Image: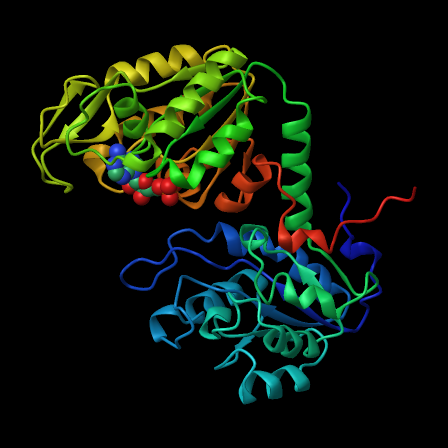
Length: 400
Ligand code: AMP
């Protein structure tokens, strides 16, 4: 799939609107704990500045649900951008209100304006036509560099593309890189090809699992989602996270894996706890002997050993979703060990999803991974074989 390329646009000295994904995690002091997404956008922003453009940046952060709230202000992003770009970045107090409009209209060459959190506007997630129009009216060119949100048909991602022709919009460098990487990976992976899938729920990843089945050689399940599969096999998983309405689907996935000859692995032991808390009593039990009332919050040591053996001969590995509640140190061990093993291997290692990216960074092995995607949901939808709504308008039509 070829996308409209920013380098083919005549943006010299023009006003450019760049949809970025600055949806970064913050700690309780409002410090950005992982600025990968901001750093990843710098190439596109600098390219535009080098072309003497006036640059308008827009992003969402969190889920303010259409309400203006200081908690979700992009102020921390503004500060980090200033450090990374080594220049002033103005922050509008609104998205398409008076302040944003005035600042955007007055913006000169080499100046950067950041709009406030797009989701302060109710119309953003509703793909509201009027909002899309107002955003589009701010600039002469539209660049989408927000891979992490390209699977959403939102006003700044999809609606806005209807206001620019192919000579006035394109994918930024990050979006290009992500789409090309996943395209190649899914088309011609070097085998054996394994997918490690974890995280909280089956529901969020069911479609991706189904789509991955014909492509991979092995699937290794971890995290909360493992318990729906274990329960579907008839095991008592105590109070572990289970989606009872998906037991049949879970069985179907396992049957389909068998039919296709895909090796499907579930944890054989877990770290079980009495309560969902860091200081809970916990112990390692086999997956079949979780005490009633206890919950599995991490994969156990035998599973780590098993998964290492299973991953030993793998040439390509996609990892989406932690193996346990990695935010709590006590339940982070399984994820940490798998992260080290994947990082130390010579396979092509692809990490997708905010949590998994955060995890490998915490473990300190992010530099050793082949590719860390800035989009969890978006990369899953690519694996589902979907064309992302935000990418649709940017696809170069092939001549017949
Ligand atoms: P997801 O957003 O679906 O990738 O899920 C990531 C979240 O899953 C993380 O916040 C983990 O704490 C959580 N998680 C992983 N393993 C478990 C588990 N065994 N039980 C409950 N939550 C889990």
